[in-house]
Amino acid sequence: MPLTLAAVGEVNKIKRISGNDDTRRFLSSMGFVTNEDIIVISDIGGNMIIKVKETRVALDKNMAKRIFI
Image 1 (cartoon, rainbow, N blue to C red):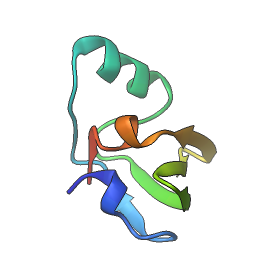
Image 2: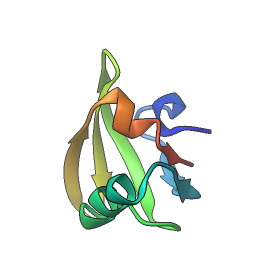
Image 3: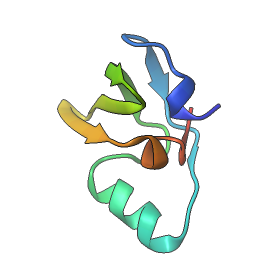
Image 4: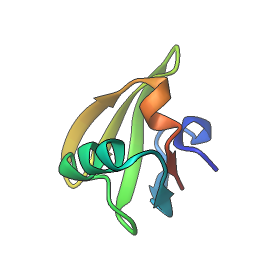
């Protein structure tokens, strides 16, 4: 399921990342890699704050739906 459907505060594991090479490379540079644990800190209007590798990252809805948990 896409990250946009994850519950706030729930620990999830990244299963795969979709998109073109540039998108996957961009997300990978921010720590979004396969088998990494992530937590949704906040979800306001589709814009999300995600905790990944002890760092908080803000993503818009379009990027978040490319991450599958």
